[in-house]
Length: 456
Ligand SMILES: Nc1ncnc2c1ncn2[C@@H]1O[C@H](COP(=O)(O)OP(=O)(O)OP(=O)(O)O)[C@@H](O)[C@H]1O
Ligand SMILES: [Mg+2]
Image 1 (cartoon, rainbow, N blue to C red):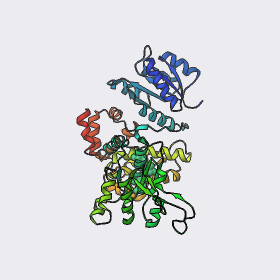
Image 2 (cartoon, protein in one colour):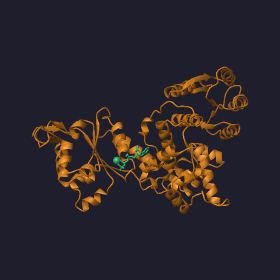
Image 3 (cartoon, rainbow, N blue to C red):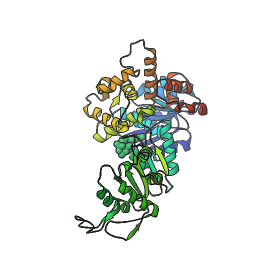
């Protein structure tokens, strides 16, 4: 039987919820309401993973855990503890628990943890379901959280959006997220790249044409604006649009009407325009390369995506996400893992090509990998070299205290899949102290640590 999970929880409602969540994720589930029942089930039908409450009537979670470790040491156990029962959590980890989760259990975290735990044991996992609110955007930085909030806020509005950000920062992903989160999600999302296309072609592509409109127009063809209907037209690299086309687009936006080339029959424009550019459009306006009036029309809601080097906290979760995704696509099981030193080097690198560059690098690393594990020496030299100057740990002396501390903090974060509360417990420090350390070693920006004043 594949991916059988035993849930041990005395509170019936919670047990049912957990069972429903895991079943929906494609796992098979068995339930027990106390430790004794759990042991009986395990004896007849060994599960692949056990999720148990710490506080149970009769046998406690930790006692159950010790029992399991004695008879079935290979079965990973995740313990859930009430908030504040940190002592028990530490005790459980010492007794061999794979992880612990504090109640109320965060569904996303639970699923991620279970997938990670089973994945590491080479199990094939059910396909991942997207966590709806995150729109496929991975990241833990303030910047990503703010972006997600803005997406939810502006998605329902019909207003035009201008997404700016360096190449590879996720502009198209955000445009798609806006569409998905809007009430236009059941309408088409049509993307058009305005870059390096001559005027006549841009025009016929966006507005469409009638048969005979120009030489070669052998049939009538709807344009992107028409194809988008009442959905979203994504105008990528809008900064590269020829000036003459900018005038025509502006007119269409103002009049909410357009015509196919070769006809005067007006068509209503219903689509929402989401534009994106990697250039500084305000500067392009100042230099006369982009029309000011069109700029204001498109820039009703500006969304800026900062480069990856300004949100280094996102690098580690992105690395884990891409490793899992790439391995599942190319069918490499178990998921290729990465050493803390290699991860530290990736975190210190500047990433001129941003997330796209990181994704491509990881794909190469996975494909070329022979050991199922990426180490620092496997990385391209330019990435390691940059790291050496930025306080990397790989070449550190054994007495380099800051490097060792960085290493330890990173391992704790990795082990807990970047759950800061759990990492703090492993390190024996408060979450606030952990965040200060993370800030000192560049894992959190100054803005990120403002949160400390709010939640600690
Ligand atoms: N926050 C994120 N979480 C997960 N994947 C991301 C994230 N941001 C970007 N990506 C991925 O990185 C790649 C590049 O993103 P995308 O194509 O949206 O960037 P872009 O800004 O449009 O880049 P370009 O300027 O090169 O066109 C895509 O594969 C995308 O899925
Ligand atoms: Mg793009």
